Length: 317
Image 1 (cartoon, helix red, strand yellow):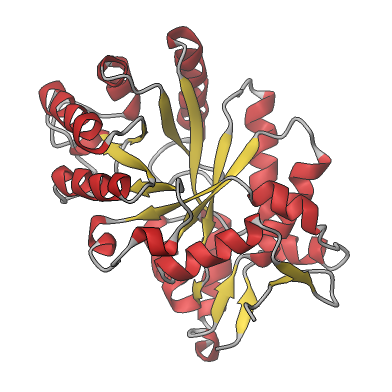
Image 2: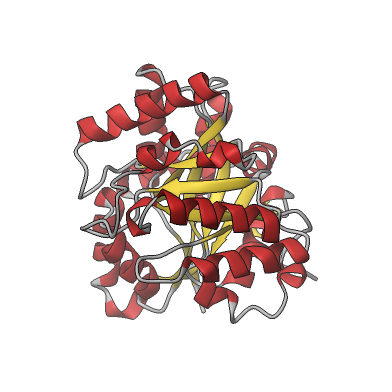
């Protein structure tokens, strides 16, 4: 299949004159993680065969699924030498007793030391928790020695939460981290446009954010697949870009790689020493092993600059 590069209109204009610095790209991508669902994990014969030892792997807890499945995958990852980061979805929990039981099992059975706490994509909470902040306030994570905690970020906003509420939440999480002496970081939804991400980072930094950011990156996938996930996520500018691409039926099965997105982020990160973007978090929409190979190649600088100044992943000989 032919491989194109994911980008938005603003990014395309910038990249025409941009020449990728491979060292900047490798520095930007050296810290990375990848996501897996319990259903997706069932199709992976060996994580150790697909990932370098110690790779951080997020394990989802999606609406309507059993959180014990999340713990089972985290246990498998730990046994294969990975750093498992289970999701804790506030609105899918019944009460603090269930939360305590889950965190107890995560730490005892899977040696979990890090979690991602999110609100969760359900309209009505199934129990007493309405937000990630309520979960954080219980103190249960600290009780079990978890001091590295991811929280959600939205560079393109959220269809369910107002801009002011998102800003207030980031402020609260900064205050909470400082008050409790915890290592919090922001992990975002996936995006396609580097300038949107860089602008968002500058805005929240100007508003007082000090938390490092793990930016969501869509792994190589067909436009058809990206369109489906963009619809589910409801992301703004990126959704418009993918929708435009998807209208051309001849491109639906074309594989899109996030080369220009990463090139734009790397350039912005290198140009601003105070930038808090510190990590690429990959969503493997087009396949787990394929995305892992791509992420590792970027981190190791195994890329070649193209005639137009972009880059291509270097093919193994």
